[in-house]
Image (cartoon, rainbow, N blue to C red; front, side, top):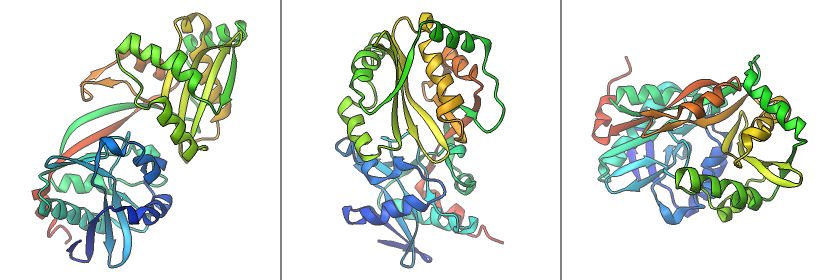
Length: 328
């Protein structure tokens, strides 16, 4: 355990499971993805290097990360990361915590820290103290993705093209069902589509998404669309306190003719999640944010989504001294 000023930093151990999860449950910028049960479903793929930061004996922040060589990353098995802390931690304390983290990593032989920031709308309160800390530490922005987000509590306009899709779905008597099983969507829609169109597999295998649903049944939800009792489209939603996030969206070859994908999302934004703060369609970027899938972004924006960026920073751990003598 490394002690810097009044803060001590330690690497996560299995014995910290309960303390970590309890802290995630009350932090202002955390979601269920930071729960250890979610982080560890693929622990065989990553060398966990998560950190806990204490002020005396009180846990005040955690950093979900993994290690590759001499670099520590915001956990690469998660959509987002960053320094996680509670509402009572003031800006000056966050700066001190981040200095402590960099100094700890530097002493452990870690040269670089890469942080994938939590998009702002996921936090239950404003939490951009870490952005300022990264600026002071001379972190470099190396990637920026674009999240397409609908503010569900403000008036949003759904484009004519999307409503035409909804009309097609109704004319074709499509039926939407929320289901606890994932095999039909994975095996009949998602895997074939990703394989044929992009030559990739889903980030989560069928077994993994089933396991995660068992652990987080109220957070992971599956909506399927049927035509004449045959599945034709579906979407997997990761639901947090503020946000319904589209983890997977996929339809079969005649989705345009049937209007199946338009139909399920019209239902989600006008009924299922109408009282939620935001619906996040996720990113439409490739090549570390330097390319944009125009068609995908347009479809999301035509549902009334606007763009919120998600930033990725790299900082040298030797830059901890830039956080000295900041307070005047």
